[in-house]
Image (cartoon, rainbow, N blue to C red; front, side):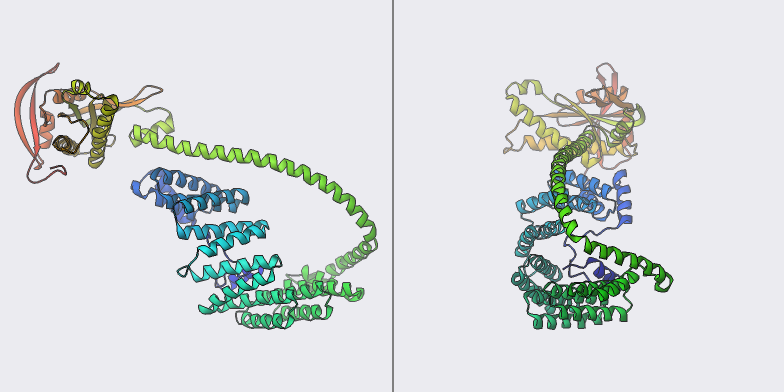
Length: 619
């Protein structure tokens, strides 16, 4: 027997000291904090966070969000991001929060689907604690749905997964819930076994309130078994403790439940005894709802005894209390009139009972036909909703993948502008450092390689170049064949881009040199030239289908000439870049004088190397 409302009111009265032992809280409870969620959503949307914190931010948003639609959205984003990062624990959290969202929406079927996805992941990746908690969540949903057999199955799985290190309250709660499911199924011996286990835990941790509700449940089982002495002993013990915590409404519910059990067995004296005890306690503490329930119970008992006069009298008082929660005296006359009418209607119902039974048979047949039609319609809608759910999940996943791909192709600022406006305006940057690389003799060398080895080799070098760009905060522009192009100072202007670009160039040269000298390296080994020039450029996107981010201007052309006019294993820079680098002590410069550059005439060039003050990671 579960009394959610009465226990919830008692929780409020005791400032959440009571968990509610007739229907204990789920282990996977929702720890919601809307202010925290709102603040994190702002951070997430602006992108003002380190990339490695993305999963934690999404998880915290999902755990804190109170709006079910937003909770569903961010749990889906968490799943997608976790899959991309190959993080099982965050992916599990995403499926759990997705199930919580559907449970809050009342869609128990979809909640179960999400919980099962989480359970499958927890089992596959051997997440021990998560396997236990998700099985309790599944059991709770089946209990809500009224499927006690399945609920029992999953409570047992959860308990089997728990060990001595598990939280005592959670363990005892799961056992008490399982015992309650057995009680509902009338499997009383099994219910007693689990009530006994939960009672031992509550006693071991000296949780008096838990012990009291455990005793009350045991008392109900003994009453159902007909062992009245044991039932009364347990109920009396429970009532004594509950009185200390002022849980009078729960006590009244216990007594009325006992009265109902004896009423069903036609033990009218016992039924009257417990109903009267409940009534006396409710009247003593002014519990008007419980007073009303007790009078209704007494009315029912006397009606079955054939004492219609007393039954009507108690029923009338029940109506008075039911309708006079705020003020009995003000509404008493109105309640008397309404009661008389209800009493008359009740007598008419008794007289017409025989005729109603015949009508009910006809109605039952009609209802059966209607239910069949409803079931068919519900099945059709279920299939359609399932298809739509799968479609929406695929769309959400692909959308996330598309956004990630777009950010890989374009600078983040440019990608956001393209998403919002559908186009990107060209932008001029007054000072940008452009870097070009080229492998010497690549065309000739590639003729001796298979296409697979060639692509694998280029990917090896360019992947490392990408890593170096990330290290120094540069923007990769494009690759053309064996040529790699990047820039510093865009899309966000900075003062130190010549420094960062030059450091990146030296890292590239040292990496390629180290790879060439590595006897264990099995891929192609190349020599490389690197050139840098600094000046104004214009950036933008070209194309309408396979669009590309690129930069233009004489600065780009001169940078290309710096590379082609350079030498193997050296970084060749222009006069402009040299002037900007002289203020840094990291570098040493070798003047080359004015050298003829194709299409540009003579240009002052310099070789640059790292000084003793700073050593590269590849040195």
